[in-house]
Amino acid sequence: FDKNMVIGDLHLGIENDLARKGISVPSQTKTIQKKITRLISKYKIKHLIFIGDVRHRLPLPSRQEERELPSFFRHFIKKVKVSVIKGNHDGRIEDLLPNAVNVYPASGFIIDNIYMSHGHNKPIPTAKECSTFIIGHTHPVIEFWSSGVRMTETVWIISHGCMELQGNAGTPIKVITMPAFNSLLGGVAVNSKKYKISGPILKNTDFKNSEIILLDGTYIGKLKDLEIKKK
Image (cartoon, rainbow, N blue to C red; front, side):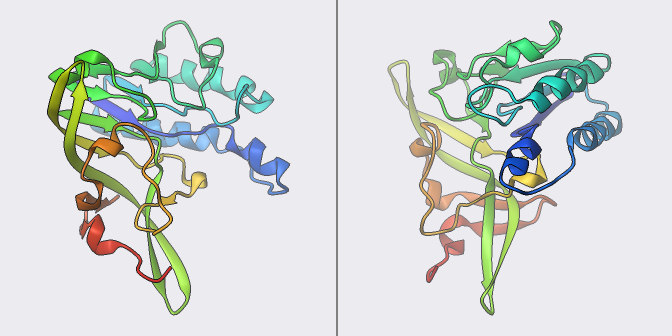
């Protein structure tokens, strides 16, 4: 198989939203572009797959997004095949992308027998043929408290469950929830008592028994054992 690289939740243009709230942060689009380019070179990637929420502002693109997204993607189509699965922030993103970029609906697509989507919509019917799902959308982090100070770590989540797809009840699935690629986003503390599962895919998993893995690959346990009891 060709080497594929999957990236979730870029939220390019978030700086514009932060500026409207009085927080001045320079555009990180070029920095993110360089980081992805280094990964493509290091791992000899042939296909770059963005699984939703490439851009940030709702419902329509900001001027920053209109200015930066076209050149961001022109850079990558010169190097690799590029595909985008639309997320809930990606309305009209087709208008900003070069024609060479493959754009898929929010229901996702299948590659190498792995189903991929942003995670906020129901899967395509043919996902019943896949045992592994890769999604984004959640921006998962684990929170820790020490001496009254809150700390967070960005994580991967691996969940298991069953899903009814096109009348095929109880299809066993492994769901890999990817961390957000853009570090400006922060994240959602999935071990907080306030956390509510989002999206139809994760709702069909035994989420509390999910395995939690740090970005460096360190396994830190099951979610149920990491839940914050007092916060």
